[in-house]
Length: 128
Image 1 (cartoon, rainbow, N blue to C red):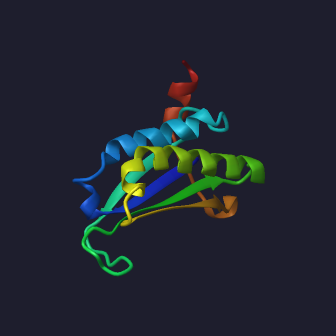
Image 2: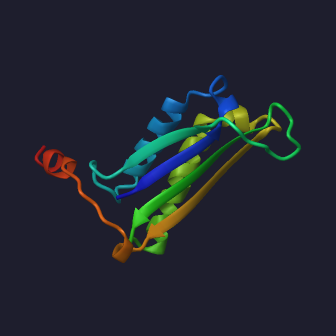
């Protein structure tokens, strides 16, 4: 049940291929070998209103939160976080080369007693 949520400043719409960033992050999550195919969800949301640092018009950000179910070791969580950050940083390398961009990631473990799920995709994907 890993979910990666990307929130980004709306001015990135013209500077970055957000769909490609999502695809790169999704592939990185699967490549860890920790999660099955039916598990990862990657979503991106534009923030139309924001104020960043010195409020320079070129300032932009991508803030990521990766939520995953309990049961993974600290090493697995760290390895997945590093894989996501590496993939997204590579996809956004031109922006990171400029002095107006911020990229962040936080990994959050979900409390199993406070999480409910229903998923009909697993049966279909496991049958392959």
